[in-house]
Image: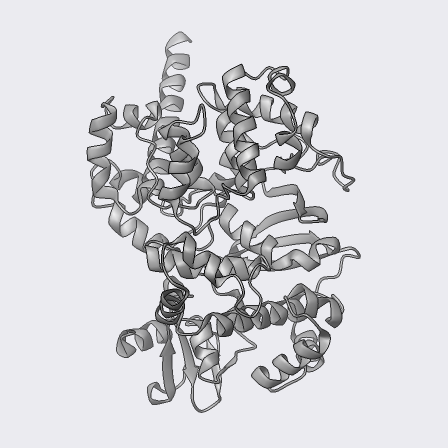
Length: 498
């Protein structure tokens, strides 16, 4: 339940920490806004507060054309009910739920009935699964109409509608204007970017956000020919279903967001693409809640104070992330990155892009599952790890392992450790990044234990209990502290030798 007085106070101050936490419907205009909306603050008696954009639209409020609620950052899943709602949202984005189909499957994953699942979505988001699906599609369409010059027919299908007629009917009913009218109004205030065969969209986050640290982490682990990281951008090749292309991501701090350039060939799978990028760049995190909790601990207070925008880099693709984790077992990050590039060259399909650094698609489970241990081992990969990779690929190919962000991370860990050569450290690292579990903790990690004073695995686990449910973020701080400590010691050694 939202405290209306506290929400109104946040609204009047336009506090960005509350962006996406609540929305305000203004009864005098019939419009709903984000708490950072630049328009004149409405009178409190005219405000109704909602926990989600879906609930505001269910109450028949229209999205504001100034602050654009479709850009509000989402909420990070931290408990089972929230994970269920998050997973349904992702399945809608992936196009795997249509008019309610697929709810039984998701309910089964969590060991609940579809009726319970509907109640959870209603409680968490204030709408039914079908209403959630409709709003998600309409808000994406609104963003595409505003920020791109894609034809309206393409936007209809990219947003998940089965026909242009259904799209026009839904848009007109909910927003009381045809799509063409919104595009015309948007063009009067914004110059949509049209780069020929590409378009750009914005993805928002809650500040602070440490963009440079994200790039540093991903750059050290990038897969040659598949990914390319510079001092200010991240780019990669993409294959979603039968669609292939590339994306490039840059930072727009003045807009508190990331700008995604994508090829138009990826437009039909745009919801899935944007969902994966939100996971990769950890855009749904609540840095205020995370920092407030972790700062209570003496081990972490200094790092959290100094690095308030530190995020947990996710994964664009769960299978790709799991392969990368296996390749990184018991070797340096640099060595693992070299082998990962070799692996992509051997098993990834070629693709043409404008970037000479991006020439291959990430290897698919279906192709690797047909290989032999020898095929993999001859790339310089230890035989036991080659066997692990093969077992992982076959589990993905059979559908028994998915590594869905928002699904049950505990179940993912159990399935991973049942495979040969995958222990707790690897499973927790994969859960941390691919399953997007904010409470993963690879207690066996030597760097983590050294940062805590060279403690044992058991002692590290005991210490970490105070950090729950944000242990993944604590691990990022410990890793960063160790890097800083190593750099300082190296500088001291160099100075002493002069």
